[in-house]
Image (cartoon, rainbow, N blue to C red; front, side, top):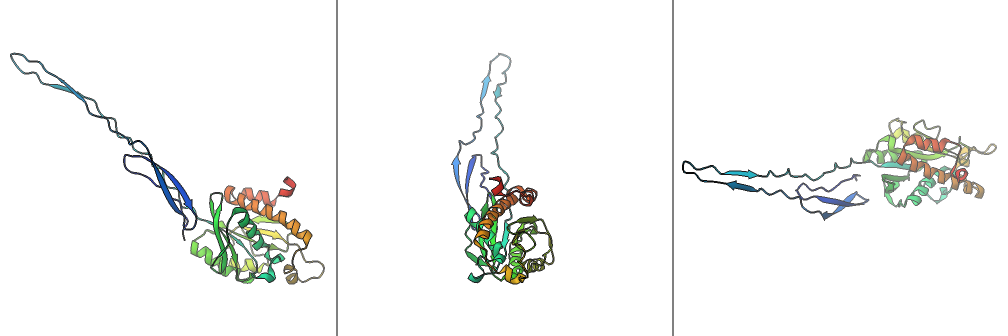
Length: 278
């Protein structure tokens, strides 16, 4: 599958105004052409005069009006092909793991899909995939179904097949070292002990230069084992607080794609949230 943008142009003296509509799938475009009055060429005109004399014949002189140069239709350059962003949420598949702390990456991607009207319904590259747009930017949403520790098998295959630059791969995952419901957006970094991120980096051949959005789930209470903690569901109060976090995350992703990393990082990494701003 390829992502691209195209236009329809006329090279004849008749100029057409392209009206293009886009349809997402393979990015096909159909164009309706509204006919504009054809360009016309000036006519040539001439005049002559003559008089006779007894000695000789005068030559006939003619005057002509030069035609104006033919006006060329304005042809716009086609827009360059825009590569999609890949937004990946990490988690574990199956009902057993739904709504657990380790699956907040999945939930964040689901929130993006719902807000942007993107259906995550196809299965490919060992992942649930959805394709659509955020603003005018083409995006792919992915939820690897390989289980957390093998996430890179899916993510690496998608990136390789679609030739997506790593700077346009955003990975979203849970983080024990961040306070609960806090977000942190970074341009690159290590796995921080997260096995899903470890797998992704391994399948990127050790390349760590890709953005990631970390969602804090906090440290386990008391002496609770971290493995048991990340597989626990959220309480009702935690769920309410997490919903605000997802709103912030959605806004952060929109800013990232439409305005750039720096503005998004400023929004995410400041202490202000949408709840506080509202």
